[in-house]
Amino acid sequence: MKKIAVFADVQNLYYTVRQAYGCHFDYAALWDGLSRQGRIVEAYAYAIERGDARQQQFQQILRRLGFTVKLKPYILRSDGSAKGDWDVGITIDVLDAAERVDSIVLASGDGDFDLLFERVRRQGCEAIAYGVPGLTAQSLIRAASHYVPIEGDLLLHNP
Image (tube, rainbow, N blue to C red):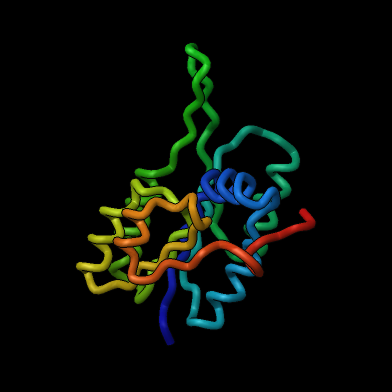
């Protein structure tokens, strides 16, 4: 049975799905679909911690599904800009997991991960990108073994 590692860029999913569809991403549907393709042996959801009660409830839902939730503090800079980026953490975790699994699944449309996917594929690991059509970087789609558009059953219309 194929061993799968899943990496969900929560901020990217939240903003792109909201922008494109006005709703939320269905993490349970993602999990169910991937479970039919193999065994999920690792699953991480990367989020920003703001101390919000609704956000903490959402994180508990992710944990119940089987995700390990990794949190970084929300940083508001003195110039008014915000920082809450998991790109380096995701990259390190993906490279580590690629040695142990057959398939890497990244739920993010961020083009910063294109080089990561090229590297993962050179290591002989399948690299699957889930992203919102029109909001997923073409470079990531090209670097992936497979691209799965986030639409239809992957959308949660009643949050």
